[in-house]
Length: 344
Ligand SMILES: NC(=O)C1=CN([C@@H]2O[C@H](COP(=O)(O)OP(=O)(O)OC[C@H]3O[C@@H](n4cnc5c(N)ncnc54)[C@H](OP(=O)(O)O)[C@@H]3O)[C@@H](O)[C@H]2O)C=CC1
Ligand SMILES: CC(=O)N[C@@H](CCC(=O)OP(=O)(O)O)C(=O)O
Image (tube, rainbow, N blue to C red; front, top):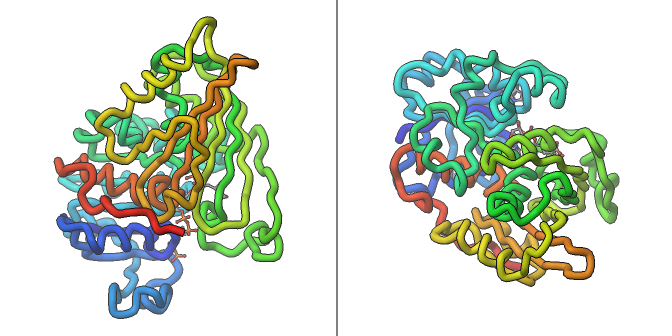
C-alpha cells in the first residue's frame, strides 16, 4: 500500500512512521507538514537519522490522490474537516486521527470543539474506527474517524457491560489520567516541564470534547442511553492513559455475569487483554497496541469499577489507525502491530 501522512511532524504522525516502517505491506510515499516544509524528517526528529530521511512536502491533495492508496491525517482539530472534501475522490482511503469526523453533526462538533468541521454529507460518510466493535463497517469504508485516546480506553472498558444490560447507562463516572504526549508536540504553558513535573491536576471538567464521543458511541453500539461524568487529569509521564470507570450494576447482577460479558465481548480480539481483579499499569502496555482491562465488583455499593490502560499514542492514535488500515485493506488486524510492550 502506498501511504501518505499529513501531520507527520506531530507525535501521532511520527508514531505512524515508526509503526509503518516495519509493516510488511506499507510503503510511505510522502510526508506532509504545514510549517516545516522542505526540512528532512531527521532534522525534526533526530532519532530517525539513517532510518527515515524523507523531506517534508507542502500539502497537495491532487498529488495525494494520484500516488497514495491511503492517507493518514494527524492534524489539530479543524484541519481535516477542510482537507477531506478535497481528498474523497477515486480509490483513496482516508484515516483521520483527529476528532473532526467522530461526532454525528457539525453542530455538535462546534459546540464541543469551538471550531468548524466538514459538512454533514462528509460526516455521514465516516465510520467510527473502534476496531474491536465496528470491524464490519470499518472494512467497507473509505473515510475512517479514528477514536480519541480517552474514548478508546473508556469504550473498550464499558461497552461489554452496557451491551449485556448489566449497568445503568446513566450512572457512569469516568476518571481518566493521561501522559503529556496526549496534548501533542506543540509548546504551551500547560505542558511545560516545571508546570507538569511532580504534579497532577484535572482539566476541562464537565466540558471535555471526548464526553459526547463516549456517550454517542455507547448509545450507537448498544442501543442504550448513556450519560457520563468525565474528568480527565494530566500526569507527569510521557505516554499512557488510565481510565477508571464506575457504574451502578442493575439489580441482581452477579460477578459471574460481569466476567461472562467481558469474555464474550473480547473472545478472539488480539489487542484486548482481560485481567480481572488486577491493577493494570500504563507501563504494561507502553509502546504497544494493547488495551488491558480489569474489573472489580464492589458488592457493598452495588457498583462495578473498571480499569483500562492504553498507550495513548499507539492504541489511542497511530496503532489503532494502523489496525483500522489493516481491516480496510483486508489484512489480518495484527499485521505490523504484534509487538511486545516496552518494559519497564
Ligand atoms: N497525541 C495523542 O495522544 C492523540 C492525538 N489525537 C489527535 O490527533 C491529532 C494530532 O495530534 P498530535 O500528533 O498529538 O498533534 P501534534 O501537535 O503533535 O502535531 C500536529 C501536526 O499537525 C500539523 N499541523 C498543525 N497545523 C496544521 C494545519 N493548519 N494544516 C496542516 N497541518 C497542520 C503539524 O505540522 P507542522 O507543525 O509541521 O506544521 C503537526 O505535524 C489531533 O487532532 C489530536 O487531537 C488523537 C488521539 C491521541
Ligand atoms: C493530555 C491532553 O491534553 N490530551 C488531549 C487529548 C486530545 C485529543 O486526542 O483530542 P481530539 O483527538 O478529540 O482532538 C486533550 O485532553 O484535549
